[in-house]
Image 1 (tube, rainbow, N blue to C red):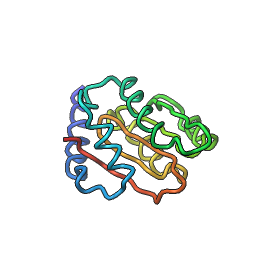
Image 2 (cartoon, rainbow, N blue to C red):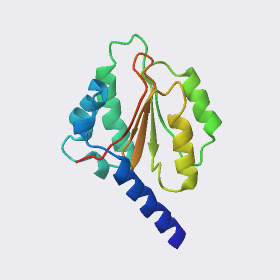
Image 3 (cartoon, rainbow, N blue to C red):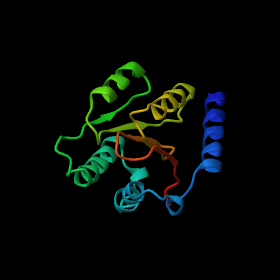
Image 4 (tube, helix red, strand yellow):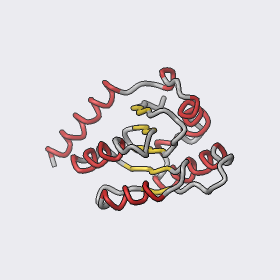
Length: 150
């Protein structure tokens, strides 16, 4: 138990050292996601994962509605096989999103988060500490963010 608490404290301290605020984001897509979705009333961090996904899905659906194909959304679990997630990524259309709750909860989750964010097809990753967001956006330059929501 003590090791788990120490691991999370180190992970959070490391996150605080490396993370930025919305004011350092130069990507219009990510900045819009932060200001128009994540910072809406009833703070994103206080929502349950299912409600977080619904909020992101609603916002994301409106922003990528110019695509002819439907977007796919997935909640990745730390106990899930990473090959299953990679298979989803390979078969999902452009604009798809993977939400990864608690990417820093333990070493296994952190390792999986690192592998997912390095996937070539998932070229936008946003680490909010309590949740990780991975987007398949082939038309966007690869960018990885660690962001503190204010």
